Length: 398
Image (cartoon, rainbow, N blue to C red):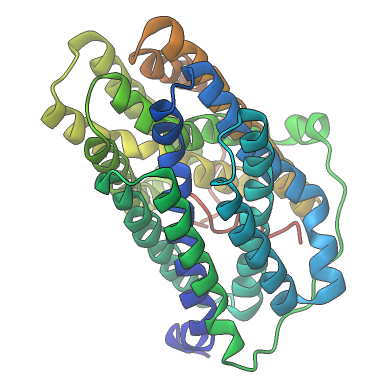
C-alpha cells in the first residue's frame, strides 16, 4: 500500500505549478469588480462581465477535453497556461466592456481547462486508499493560494499592475512541469449529459449543485463589489473574501463527519440554514465592519454545498454506470449557477444598494432549505465530501 506522501511527492511539480495558477486566479477574480468600479462601470454591467468568466467555464466542459486527448496532459497544460497569460495581459490594451467580456470568457475557459488537466492527473495518480488525503492536500493548496492572490487587492493596485502580476504568476505556473519527465495519465472518453434524466435520479443533488454555483461563485466574483458599495476600501474587500474562504475551509472539516453521520440531506439543510441566518443578520442588523468579518467566516459554510451535492448523488445513484453522466450534469448545473450569479447580484446591488448582495442569498438559500426539506432522506454511502471550490469538479468529464 502506498503512503499518502508518495503520490504527493510524485505530483509535487504539478502542485507547485497549479499553486501559482491559483494565486493568479484569486487576484484576477477578486479584483475584477473593483477595477471596473474604478473606471465608472455600473453594477449590473460588472455582473455581466464577471458572468462571462463562468460562461467560458461551461464551454470548457464541452470542448476542452479534445485538446487534452490530442496533445496529452503536459502539452495541453502548456498551451492553456500560455493562453491564460496572454489573455490576462490583453486586459491592459483597452477598457472596452465588450472586449473585456470576450477576454473574461477566454480566461474562464483556459483557467478551468487547467483545473481539468490538473484534477484528472491527481485522480489518476492517487489510489483509493489515499485519494482523500491527496485531494485534501490539493484542497489546502487551492485555499491557501487563492487566498494569497486575493490579498493582493489590498495593495490598491492599478489595472496594469493587477494583470501584470497575475500574468507573472501564470507563467511561473508553467515552469515546474518543464523540469521533470512526468508520466501522464490517459484521458477517458466523453460521456453524454442530460439534466432532466439526472434530476429524476438525484433532484436534491442537482438542485444543491446549482445553488452551490450561485452561492460560491457569486461570493468570489461579487463580494468585493458588496464591500466597496458599502463605502469600504479594497483592503477590506480582500479581508472579507479571505474570511469567507477561511470559514469554508474549516466548514469542510466539520461537515464531512456531520454528513457521514447525519446524512447529506441534514448536512445540506444545516449548511444552507447557517448561511441563510447570516444573510438575514446582514440585512436586518446592518453590522459594522468587524462584525461583518466574523459573520463572513460563518458564511463560508456555502463552500460545502457543491461537495455535499456530489456526496448526495453518490448515495442515490444505484446504477454506477450512470455516475459519470450524473457527475458531468452536476458540474454543468454548478457552472450555469456560477454564470448567472454575477449578473443577478449586479442588478440587485444596482437596484437595492449593497444589501442587494445579501437579498440574493436570502432568496437562493431560503429556496434550497425549503426544497431540501421535502426530499427523502437516504443512508449515506460513507464517502465524505472532500472538496469545496475546485477538486473533483472535473474528475469524471475528461
